[in-house]
Amino acid sequence: RAGMAGAELERVPAVQIDGDGVFKYVLLRVRGAGAPHKDVVRGHGWAEYHADLFERTAEELARHGLSCECLGGGRLAHRPEERKIHVYGYSVGFGRADHAVTTEKLKAEYPDYEITWADEGY
Image (cartoon, rainbow, N blue to C red; front, side):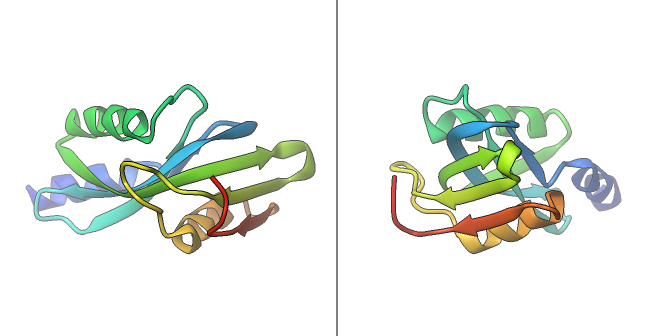
């Protein structure tokens, strides 16, 4: 069972964010039954609240036998024409995500981007 959960965990994309704009994001810790965990970033403009991102992702993961917890949130300013992403802010409901972790995840996904973060701002 843990082997299956591990395989499902491997298939979960580390980063799923909108291609342009300023939007909320959450940092989630995804777990399978008895499997190690993986931290992932989800950020989309359709989300009015950080909880919307968390709940939709949790539903998708549950269909694959995985669970997740929210480690915090913030905002992303994604400017593809400048090849830049800025990570900042916090979630009122979940607290501030570790933007340094989020930045590392984004750098792996967007290696040719300039990715910065700051604890200030909302």
